[in-house]
Amino acid sequence: MPYDLHSVDGELERTVLVGVSIKGSRPLLSPADSLDELRLLADTAGMVVIGTVSQSVARIDPATFVGSGKVEEIRELLMAENATVVIFDDELSPRHQRELEERFGETIKVLDRSALILDIFAQHARTHEGALQVELAQYEYRLPRLTRQWTHLARQAGGGSGRSGSSGVGLRGPGETQLEVDRREVRRRIARLKTELEDVRLHRSRHRAQRSRSGIPLIALVGYTNAGKSTLLNALSGADVYIADKLFATLDPTTRRIELASGRQALLTDTVGFIQKLPTTLIAAFRATLEEIAEADMLMVVADASQPNVLSHIETVEETLAEIDVPPIPRILVWNKMDRLADTETLPRLAVNATFAAEVPVSATAGEGLPRLVEAIDRTLAQALYRMNLRVPYERGDLVAELHDLAAVQQQSHEEDGVHLTVRVPTALYERFKPYRVSG
Image (cartoon, rainbow, N blue to C red; front, side, top):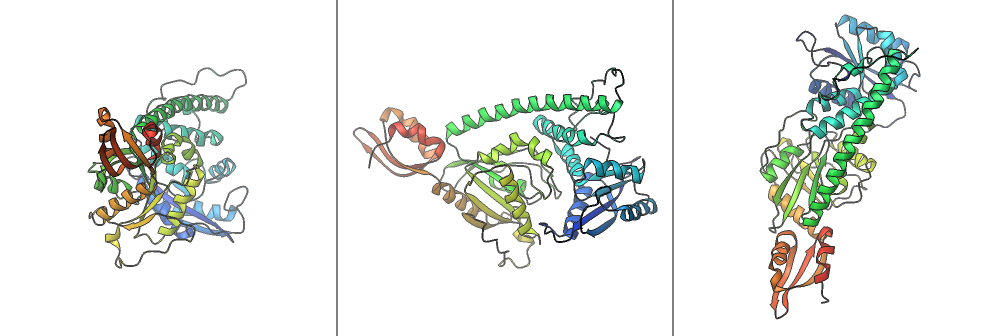
């Protein structure tokens, strides 16, 4: 990881947060709410926030991001509070990073929101795939920022995986600086990680193809971080996925089988939580995982109904889905954490362009509203199914049983030439049963 953000001699690192708003801009979250979220991120990363600094500017300063006067104010606060880390709420350009490191001095670590999120992801990646994805995102973030605090990377383990820290830098060529050696080493590691992740992507693709042939519909849970997706997965499937009241408590995707109200089965997969200003390098690195969302038959957008900024959270989710080119898959909006609302009759009004097949209030923790949610899932999937009239030979009783498990059987009769069924099947099963289709 770029820094040890968690402790110095056993003590939590003391941190100052900096938020900048540009006059005339309309961000999803207000500057104050965005700083509150940054504070939660710092807490999740294991730091203690001892102060915040806010500034409203007409434009970003090209040299120091905040201007020389504000840099001096921040430096004085850092010294007065004995803080060693300053975190900016927006992604700093490599030039801003270098200039601020120079202004604050070697004892102060200069981070931005992206670096902080990457560190949190590194802490929470528990699988080999997750570690690869985070490591790639970290190196792609570091490459243009290699300065005094980022050199000698070849002797550090990247992304928490512990895989790539054993190789040495090697001898420098004539006139080659340490920085050039480090850059070459980082590029080499990025290329290797991309190759490994492409293998993972191909494996996932084959797995999806096999699952598609089975005809079991896939439902992807998406939502803002800490909206309660993992708790909902546990409640619906009886799984035992790790949950905690922290941002990005779970990172690696988990898939479980659930039984719907009609008796049909579906697969429910939990995905990484979204957040405003999610690093683009992280989205790119998690392409293999996020493709699971694009391949789903239905999305469940989980929203924390108790959050004052819940509409902005939903908008952030929709923008991220658009960024990763998710097609117009049928969606259900799940208003979670209803047990935390004093007035459970009133829910925020969605923007006019928000389109959901259903909106279901639930409390995943208390188990309230789950039967209604399962019915809504079943109904939404059924509306996305193809209607087929089939004649299945008696010797293929296995196909009839499979249709009862995976499709919605509306009518069935036994005739001389076989079993006649009227069914609604998911797209994945349509081609498979097409040879048995009859008019009627």
